[in-house]
Image (cartoon, rainbow, N blue to C red; front, top):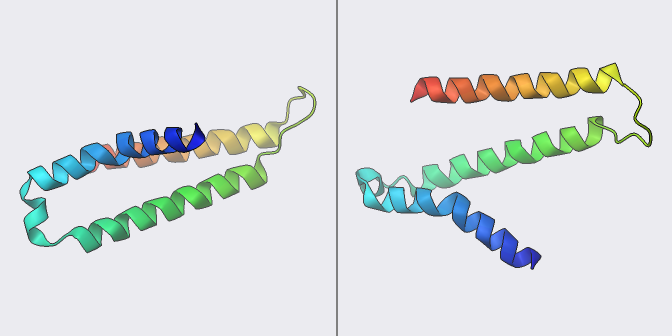
Length: 91
């Protein structure tokens, strides 16, 4: 079931981009290599982000308030918001 879920998510994630790529003139300019490089960079940064979150955010056994963890989570969310807004600004 996990493999099915993975393939389902992968198709839903990359399928529309593949259709858009083949239906537009982008496919005529030999940008396959650039697309693979961009995907590799994206996957690398996502992996680094996940490793950092798993390393620095600890799961506490009790429900105590930890201001350091809250600050790190807020900073991470702020970086994501700024990144998304810059991505929208370039469109």
